[in-house]
Length: 82
Image (cartoon, rainbow, N blue to C red; front, side, top):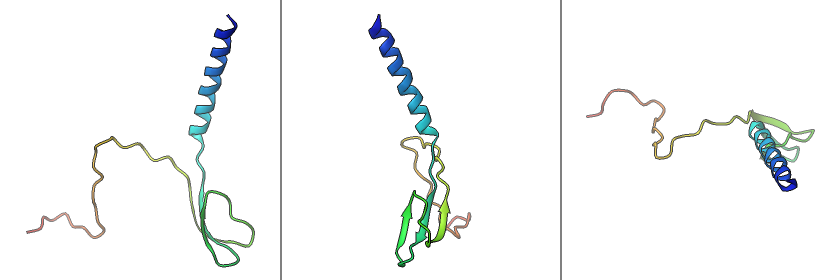
């Protein structure tokens, strides 16, 4: 009986932790340090750094396997080529 309760507790703990970690998304920073180094990191830049860009960490929707990504190029017209 104790092993059943222990298993139930472990399974519920595992599922609880899995749901918590899926909801977390971290921001990414592109910044230049005081020494001039360019850094891309998911940690907040240290004082004295210049933030170039901050990208919110969003979860992208999953793509169906085998579905090709459309190859769209900037300036692409919808007119067919001859």
